[in-house]
Image (cartoon, rainbow, N blue to C red; front, side, top):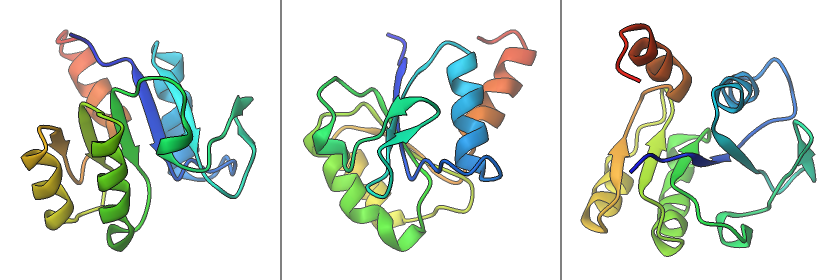
Length: 127
């Protein structure tokens, strides 16, 4: 089953930030983007939620743009909302969080960009 709903934790309204450009790429490629950032009410014209637990819809992928040290509570929240995938962006590495998520049955991708991987797979005809 395809995962089409992505909560982007740490999505910035700043267009110069990677999280912003990745969110636009994913949205433009058919994914439903749900911003998670307690500091803003809206990003890319979308309602922004303060935490994963505040999102009223089912989330397939939790895509994390936060410091590695901040990932463990996000992982716990991803488990609690029954996400399918924990995705830690480039340079976001937390092996304890990854092990916890895998033990709870989530697929884990670490130190990889969702947009970059999607583009590579699409260019190879794999999507």
